[in-house]
Length: 265
Image (cartoon, rainbow, N blue to C red):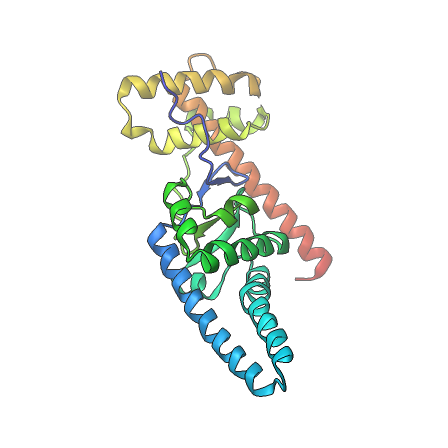
């Protein structure tokens, strides 16, 4: 039986309670719109820079140097600085709700921004954006060439996070769970348990029972003492999930109390 819950998608992060937060890649039309905004803004800055250089330059040599500096500043320095300071948001991306992210979902650094800007000069300005569009269309994450080299991709930044309600503790296992030693669950197992408990109703009864039994077998060696004889797989998984959540909440409350005592706030 294929395990539809075993793996994590490449665009997911896992929180301490094994809640997956998806970072969906931006669509190509949104990327084109944000890129168009950035290009128009860059053209305006280039024209302003060239006009200023022409007004201030006293000879052709200074005009040439000023023109090159204008190109470098507008096409490389400014985009790099803006994306570094804003952690991946250019003006265009900010306008349409996008953000450049590392491949692992983290914020980009100066190195990522400068690589994207340098390759952007070639694929967007020199080659009129054709390689960037083709690469984005064939890439699963909509990455242009600069993203592939830098190890980045563009994600939708305006997302509403909706968490499913927590699984209640089965009353018959509450006393056992409070005293049981529950070892940390591997991230993939924890995510599989949470997803099956919260979304498993969409599966056929046979498939759901099969997954519950298999996951319960994987969780069973991680708890001590063993649950009462005859405990159903669903009840075991629900009890472990609920107890882990309760213990995490208690730990957070204790840490907050210590911080208040030490800092007075």
